Length: 166
Image 1: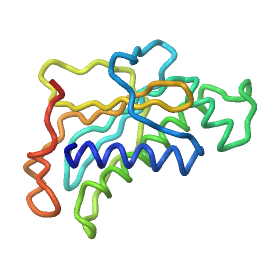
Image 2: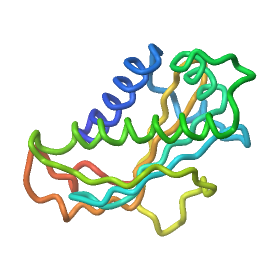
Image 3: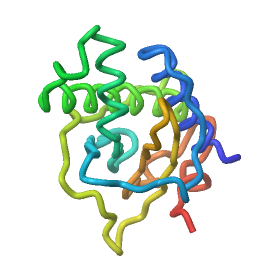
């Protein structure tokens, strides 16, 4: 398993287990089907890596997290609450991912998460995608257009571990 894969898996598992007390595991891509019932959150990485991290989360999963974290009833989960929870989950995963991937004392800068409306990957984009399962739902995390040449020192070379999924 490549370092980038390990870093993403650890970030996702740690985030959902610690935040929402959910068991998380890998999911086969064949179990994935994004529907209109998904929320897409995205944030930009600015330094030392540049690119985008995107999460596509089923509303059922986000509702379950909101109920667990905030003690809300299912019907009390407004669209705004679900979007806020999706953005915060992505923000936490991104921070943990970069902390795992970069050298121990390396700082990083990421943008604020936003709700996106473009789930598809453009033909000219470099990307890698992971699929996970929690609460009976499959969700995905993606790295898009990560600029590997800005990372020249540290534990591992991003150029060696970030590549499109084939």
